[in-house]
Length: 259
Image (cartoon, rainbow, N blue to C red; front, side, top):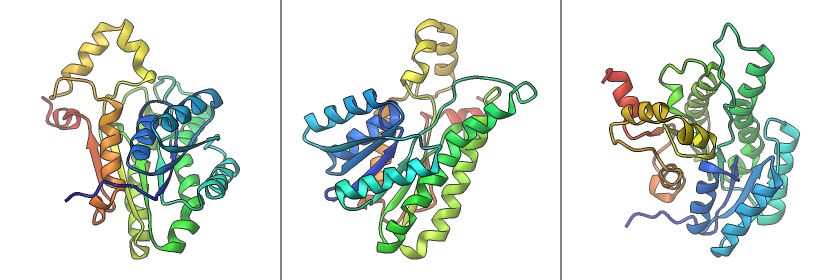
């Protein structure tokens, strides 16, 4: 029987107040984990925690700017204080609030969002390292993107960060394998979230173009990514490390084949 239980485990989910992160937090809590949610906005965090607790789960809101290494350390310390340990880290926090070609982009903007989209994962992974390596158990899940594998004009800062996330996943997986700590990633494609809700509502040609690039013919849901995340962080995936699970309805396949 496939074991997808996270009973007795503690997970930190960055970017846990909205979208994919919130779905992962809820799914993990339903699977039995205690979850610490990190994001910058207190209001959304509080609401997410209330919803998880209403379902019978254990949740903690820790307002955190994960682009700040000191705040990340406080996140880990607060989680251990509340739940006793950390077993799972989900590096989900990210942002892509603007588009600009590389010749026009402001370097401070590139650096700022590369830091949010990639360095945050480095800070978080390093912060939990003493815990996971110390007990020689646990896992890290990085939320990358199909942008890591295909050209993404106008979003070089985001695509570059997600490509770096993929290699971070593989390299740390190799480094930590002897300590029995697994490191994997999911790479979502087009997922219905608050980030693209405006475009979906007001730009029919954009939506048509997105759907035409997805062989399965629909937008992904945050729950689709959360299900993949649960699998990779559960005992069912105990022999999987260094892998990147693409969750995109076939988008990458169709893009790479030119269909």
